[in-house]
Image (cartoon, one colour):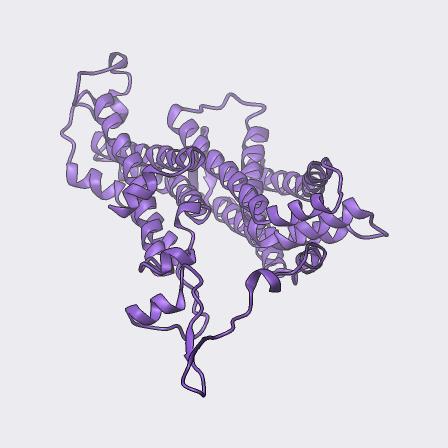
Length: 428
């Protein structure tokens, strides 16, 4: 009930993000139900149904990743001392975030089920003159337990992943018990009384947080100190090289094991798909390291204030925006490879293929946008301190454009090169 109240009273932007999560879950659920419909319509061809079900893994993973990112940036479930005083500590807020994520994904899955039943003609009759009757197995009874079983993994995975990401960190011994917990997280900043040697009572002097807070130049100096470089760049480059090697080897060896790729590319080597998955994983692992490297290159060779600020921000936010940026580059490289292959032929892109591509690409772009908004909110105090010190009001926008240009200069050629190398084995 508390999760429903927090969800209802959230900011409109937060509500929009949750609706986008529900839409992504609905698209993934509809693809899963279409795989079930294909299995019902073609009971003697289980290989095609299993392949359709396997292609739903990418939209499901993209949906779960987007749902976790939205839950992490939700300001309504952020730990605060006032909530800890009434028993809503980090553990309870983590559970509320998991429940809110489950509600959003379940809503999308139920809408997908209703739309699927509508297209089958089980609710109001057959729409679109029965054009989707063969794909959705309209003439056969739908096993409801099987449909619910297919729809359950996405909400379950999203809520479990949210709970794992937002689990409270163990920072040492914490006070236990209701009274001790209330005294430890005092909402009204009441100074504790202690007995003096003479028997009188006095207030124990505690450090004043406002007086101890660093000034604006000190805060800028501490926040501008670059973090150490993420350690995933060597592993990402290694996995990327292994994936490209597997793609090249699988494209040259014709062993007869072929898969039907989305878009009508039949008899494609199965090893090419495995190599591309490893390539995408390498991009995700190398994303934070490449972002940190872009920040270092941006502030090299006698930088000015603008380049120094932009480079330090990239180094500071490398872990936050690096992985979503790697996911976007992996999706972009796959889409570019498919467009390159289909330039000379007429691709048979059906509505389900288009829906799956929209879910994966939309979740990747929205995840990156959400992470960028979270990073901007995290450095809002630093930006305000810069403006108080007399910096031009256009400095934040210029720094943002410079960071975007640096990331595009680093990730753009890399994405194009990987897409070209990934398209060569399929074109052979």
